Image (cartoon, rainbow, N blue to C red; front, side, top):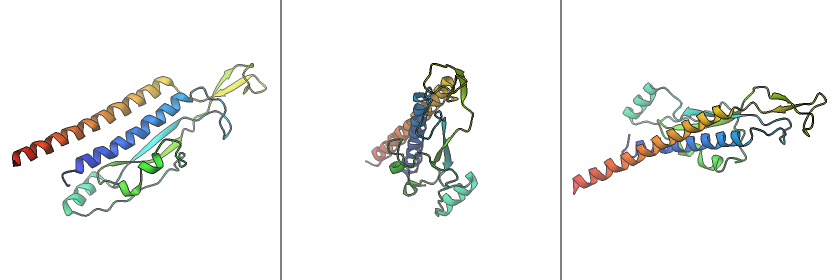
Amino acid sequence: MNIFGVMDISGSALKAERVRAEVVASNMANAETTRTTEGGPYQRHHVVFQAQDGGTFQDSMVNQLSGGSSISSGTGFKNIYSGGVIGGLSGDVTAADLTPGGVEVTGVIADASKPLQRYDPSHPDAGPDGFVAYPDINPLTEMVDLMGATRSYGMNASAITAEKGMFNSSLDLLK
């Protein structure tokens, strides 16, 4: 691994955690949305991460020691934000940015859970029985996910800062 390898890995994690935080924020903002352009209530979304080299830890170590790089980008899920609804997802996460040992966002998938039914006959989206379909989004779960994304983002930012400090100390030793 080159001297900037840790920065590349942490940088890929920063991008991935930013996307995760944006998806969680979108879930929270749409927790009461009963009508979407696709029809029906909003569905909760999940971010799918994948190791950028697509292999195991052992494969990554052998790959790094041998100096080769066999990077493949898996796309097992359809990205529902292909139009760039999340600002910059399609422009920031590309196959050209792959860093061996890093992380990539494979896709953002919709949750298949059934909507919650609440009785509110005065709501404009109420059915003939008076029930309204609301998204199955728990604000506590979303806050925990957001806290996890924030902590991961902060830890990766700290790793970049630490590596910059080590790099500067190394340069000072050479003077």
